[in-house]
Image (tube, rainbow, N blue to C red; front, side, top):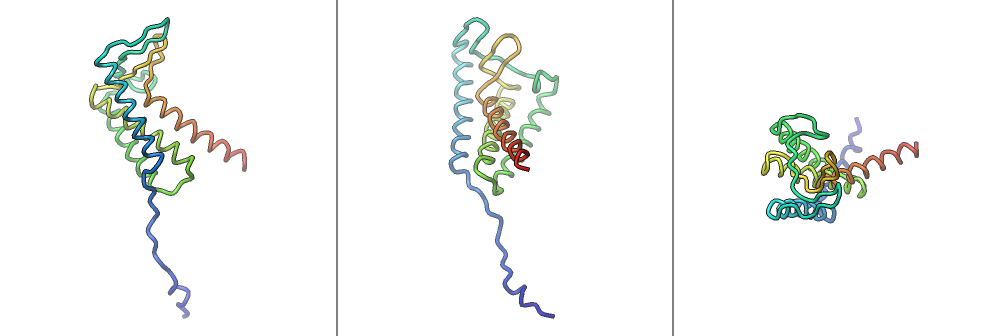
Length: 157
């Protein structure tokens, strides 16, 4: 039995992607989101113009107003953040990693809110139902990037 082809086998550990570039941007998003919330909590309503209001809106419910317990949402936020962090250690194209980093920034910042405020603190309200914050914008942008990549991949097939 010839084993010479196995003698050239070399183990190489998985390549880890350090949080350069996108990770710094994601950290900046979390810091800006938390800073804007701190300003609104300590300064009150900043602006009211017609249906637009910039001020504290406490969202103690789930996505789209679903009545889900904050503890369950907190566990979900930590789990989602951990999964995104794990996926970021894998090798992906830069645009995919950018989408994951934006999702992670938004999920982590909203999870911090659930710890601090027992719910998510939204700072922008448009009318009675549309409330959001910087973290929500990061989540929407990251999801949009990933959906666009998947859609384009489907177009190539």
